[in-house]
Structure formats: structure tokens, C-alpha cells
Image (cartoon, rainbow, N blue to C red):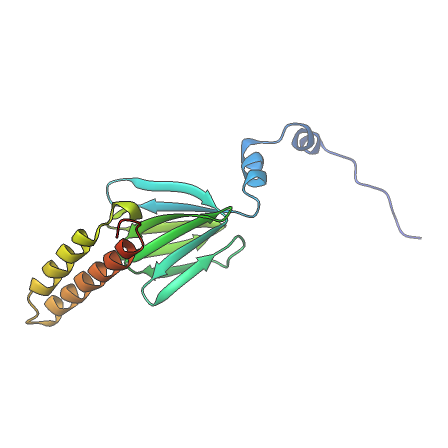
Length: 164
């Protein structure tokens, strides 16, 4: 005959059932969602919760839902989107790095701004500046390619804006 006795509840079990912590309340509120944090050298630009985060990686886009396996990747210049209840919030981010861990997407970038602030004129100025850069050695060619990628990302974001 097997032992079917229930373990005696502890004081901590009683506290957890009657007085949930702030952390457990936050976990309950975030069910099915992902937290996105965008950090620049100056400050944390964004700290928001969404159902899905779409990140511009250097080699394409990456969609992140709750429960995504951890990863660290190279961020490309382009549009980062946060989707909640069918509504997208758009941001322009420059190249950098991204970490996904425990339903938190952390984006490290030199510059980030709401996509609505990016204009076609800004993209054209960035392209002109990139084209004007010298390319006489490997380092200069690399910097020129990065500047062109940034300008191309700005142009794609600006093209989606309503006034474009």
C-alpha cells in the first residue's frame, strides 16, 4: 500500500497563497507577453511590454514571442516593431546587439527613435554622407558599408511613414 499522505503546508506556502508578491503579480500580468528594453549610451529609450517584438537583425528580421529560446545576436539598422492587440509601435534602431532571455528582449544600440521621427530627408542626408566617406583601406570601407546600411534602414522606415 502506497503512502498517499499530503505534505503538511509550511508557513511560506500560506504566505504565497494569501499575499502574492509584486513580482508574481507582474508575472501574471505579463502572461503571453514579452518585455522590450532599448538601451542607448545615453539612456534607456524604451521599456515596454508587447505580445510580439520584431527585431531587425543584420541578416533579416527576428520575431520574438513569449517562451523564445535565449539568444544573443547582431542587430541591423532598421525598424523594430512591438505588436500588441493588433497595433504596432514602430522604432528606428541603428546597428548593435540584441539579447533575448526569460521573455525579455534587450536591445543595445547607438541610436533609437520613434519611427515617425525618421523622414525621407534624413535618410537622403545619411546616404549622401555615407557616399562621401572615403574607402581607401579596409577600415574605411567597413565604416562606409555601415553608414550605407544605416541610410538604407532609415529609408525603409521613412517610406512606411504616412507623410512619405
